[in-house]
Image (cartoon, rainbow, N blue to C red; front, side, top):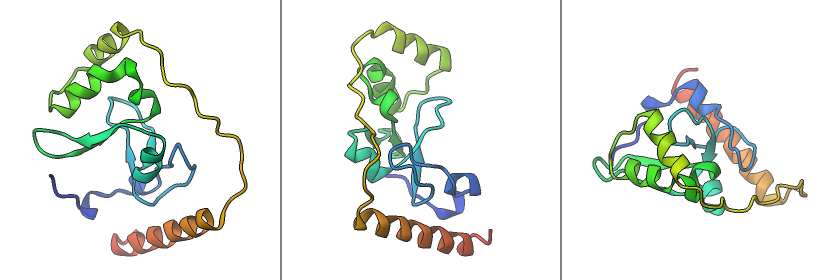
Length: 137
């Protein structure tokens, strides 16, 4: 497994908003597919069954958003997780070849914020402030 370092953390990375819970900060990761800029917390992605794994060649963590977790991108994900770099056109071609049905969209209707969610938001805010101090932002 590759070593993760806060030294690689940039301001824009710290502000990346989770597409699941809508909160910025707290260790979000970006979808590994090409120019997809969707970010999500590992636990939020796990709760929504996003595909996550480690690249076989170097152990680098890779995560895939809801769209790229779908069956249509199965071969693209497998190639990336096996360490093969794909050109954008090749990835699109592979995705278009697979016309399988996408998983159903989960209803994201507004809900009452629980105490646990409020505490999590407060913890994310504290972590972000601590990281800002550590990185001198």
